[in-house]
Length: 172
Length: 254
Image (tube, rainbow over all chains, first blue to last red; front, top):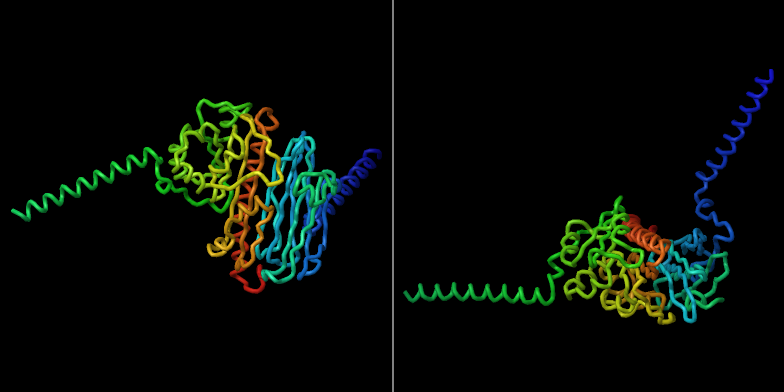
């Protein structure tokens, strides 16, 4: 009798675990957008629906990064829900000891596109942060609406999200 | 008789001319090196190869900090002790990355430099070991590598500079873009008005050290991610171009 009860309980447990696994897997597979924007703090700063003059609230900007084995590694992305004339994404890591130097930077730009992400930048310097500059311009017309730029950073998320860090390595 | 003498003189003159041209080319070759145009590189495949072609050029045997011949071999890097053997090898297989020891910069002839600059423009990742990044600038035909806001902290013999850039677009748009890399490094952006079709551009610069195992691992991690990025950029550009041409007004046109 006990054997039968154990088997039933075991079967129910396996079935339950299977159902939970299936739900997780199917939610991942059926919603690639949610997967792409899986942005756990403090590893990621994700800004949505940013305003681009001439295009509206179409832009997204994020920086993702993490420390692993004494190395900070991460990357940035600039994207838009509609094609824009110009999109820039640039991730930088500075190191300041007296004066500042760029340890690693990856700068990408595209014309007539919906977005671009950098490849990973990395550094083992102790004072490292990854800051991403995301810039957008809607129109090819030089006299059209102006461009706009946003900053995101890690680690932790948002700690160096300012133009000052990106351009000079100085803290925000 | 006269005609015979004339044709004989003509033949002799042509012979002298030929010898003169060959001697001239020989002297030029000795001074400038093997012409870059004689060692072209084939186009890169669309997809990242299982084992990218990464070459090292420098003195053999080699050791700089913890970067040794054994480490290079373990990472699948092909070793060359001179520019010409490297250039000849790259004729058969497109290069993805070149690790240049600072010593090899001294042996570089002007034509080797032209050849390296051509590979750099094709998106080959260049790593230069043991010299300051300012010394890399003329080698790659650039105006500068340091950001204007960067302090000049001289780099030593156990440091390296990794550089990569690539621009993909129609030739007329690339002409409109002009010295985009110069402006990008100088101004942090190289926005250009008047571009007519999809255009993608990418630049990376990293500096690091060779005095710890972690730093050497980081060098190869950076090298491989950049090579991966170079192939990815080509694929993204081709996709954008296909979309643009396939469905005008829907694809990339804003």
